Image (cartoon, rainbow, N blue to C red; front, side, top):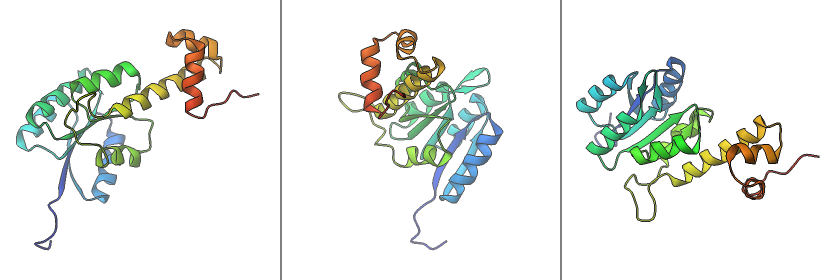
Length: 185
């Protein structure tokens, strides 16, 4: 490695899903990241004690453990570390919990893996800002995904989806139109 080469970026990947870990590790290494892995909260704490990463990717649910324990510990140690929380259950509630714990962005596991990595590489400064914390755009994206899933689960019925979401049908229609959604038919 040449002396003038930038130092390698370190990422800690905390997930108990072996397929996701394998795929994300491959993609991260292709992008020049040095990857450490942990499948449990305890293993993640040990990795954080050994070396603080430049990027932390944490699954929200790790078997019986809650990945936000890792997020809070990392944020306490380093206010600037970028933290991506992955969730297979994207909802405004889960996103809100992750953001309060210190996540920079929250990304659905349903996203393409390249998009997950880009979320960390392009994430704003991790320091909280006046008027809102980091990653608020991703909270909005999770909310939008949640609305679209509810609409799908309700077989396209705007009225039923609004009832499930506990918002008015006109509010749901307005938010969906902002996403480019149009009623079929």
